[in-house]
Length: 236
Image 1: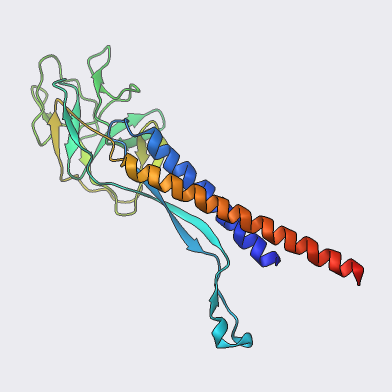
Image 2 (image 1 turned 30 degrees about the horizontal axis):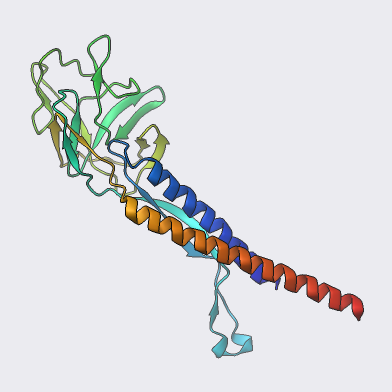
């Protein structure tokens, strides 16, 4: 009975974790360049009750959230006509310099700071292929390969790392390991929408709520069973 209680509890915790991820996806449905996430789940250690007969089979010990997978699929592109707006078509991440070091983003909603540098909405400089800040000046153009007119610089793109990325907040990512150049193209005067599928997220949220309710109910039943067992023990 105690085992059943903890198995049900694992379902409650897994549902809470999934709900937080789906809620974040929904909250960022209008965030430029946002990539939605999915939780991955595994069973706890599996036990085979051979001593009780092969018909018992394999018994699960519940579920646990084992990781977070980011959906890197392309978001829809929108024409804005703003020269500092950049959208990546295909594989790639912009490289920016933050106060904590280099980070990566798909959010090309850039602007120019007081010194004329190309920066993110948070004021982080966008870097070129040599790791330098970019100061494009007025009436600049950006080619598909990232070449900025009049500067001799190219906007840096790195490919999505095979080992995945870590969210840093502010629509930024951290990445480790060896990075390779991105193969995508840069579209000036365009922005990439979030790839969040709102209909899918709402369906998932309903499913998660039902799973949470069933796991909570199972916990309640297990708690009641334990209470009955304790009461019977006292009567004996």
